[in-house]
Amino acid sequence: MKNKFEKGMFIEKKIMTTPEMAASRFHDSSPHVLSTPSLVGFMQITCADLMAPFLDSNELVVSVKIELNHIASAPIGSTLKIRAEIHKIKGREIIFKIEAFDESEKIAYGFNDMFLIDNERFSKGVEKKKEKLDYTQKF
Image (cartoon, rainbow, N blue to C red; front, side, top):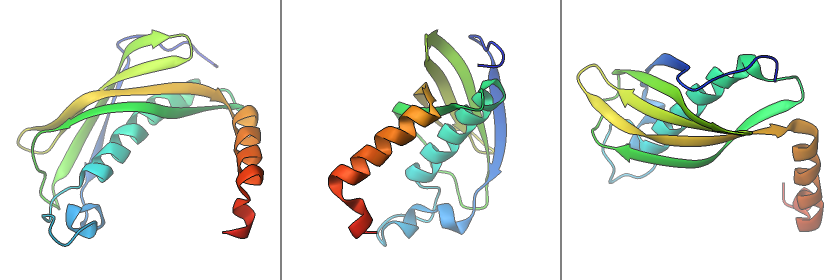
């Protein structure tokens, strides 16, 4: 790590929702509002963006657990505010408190647990797994 991050540090990002983010893209019977998978992705990216300035060139950050309560819909075309705050630090594990709002209300809240990992070690593990499972023939 280049610099030390600490509990209480936070980042807020604004994201405009687009048709590609709609729940109806995943299934015809779903409504044309922001999908939970899209929301989860935005929240994970926001947490990673907070960590990015602190990472050494050989470090990556990955989500290992997410607890999300998606409590209200967000119409497509609305602008979201995503907030990620470092809630707890346990060695290489960083636990974020996450929240999302549209223009009128809170739409989601929860926690995202992330780990700092070594890029080289991680990549070697992925390559070993691919060799073992012979993914090269499938893709």
